[in-house]
Image 1 (tube, rainbow, N blue to C red):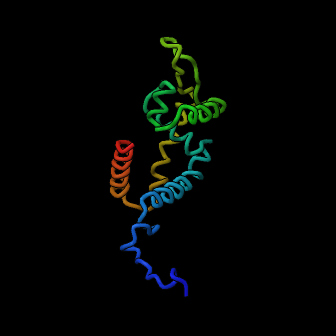
Image 2: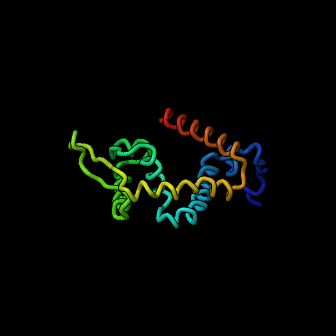
Image 3: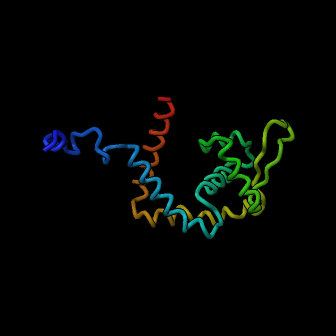
Length: 156
């Protein structure tokens, strides 16, 4: 018998390294599973989940600068640019230098991008139905996650 075999194993309740006690693990798995639920719902809209998030931000406020959009989505502008190029190729947005400030890249919805919003209005209800959780639980989870995001940002 090796020393490892003779060492009593901690129970999940008292083991700080137990996988199921790790917030990072729960967040990673939950993210993967929830995003997977969105795929078939977004497919008829011609959007990926990251593109959907961009469109949500633009439906809330249009036009927006690339910098503002990146900040809102908590993405690096270099990560956001390829998403915008694909949305532009799909005819949903345009990208152009801001007339008032040439340093800024303005992202604007096209008529097709604005029209897509009506179809997208059905997405939240479809996801809620797929999850089968009470809306109040999802609202609470959203509030807690925003608190986690703020706490993590403050700790950086």
